[in-house]
Length: 98
Image 1 (tube, rainbow, N blue to C red):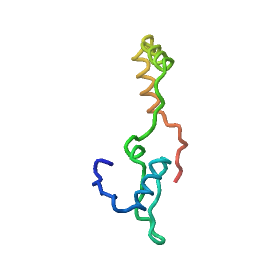
Image 2 (cartoon, one colour):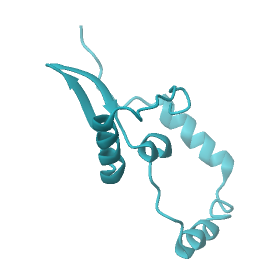
Image 3 (cartoon, rainbow, N blue to C red):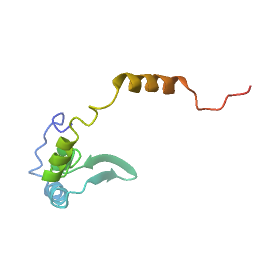
């Protein structure tokens, strides 16, 4: 989304510079309003491009992932698929009376 936006030089607009710096420093978006109408949203560039923040992976995360390898090795695949098919054919909803 940030790649689609065309840059605008705000060097000659001190109030806009102040507002943009406030948004950057607080890392909180602001809505630009004209009268009763919201016309634009000013968001920090990092928030607009980074998406969801993820916590860094820990050694415990990697160990948990590696310990799951082969966890389904002793599962009878044919029995699993058969039970899966049967459960999809079975309706758990009550019959509809018209």
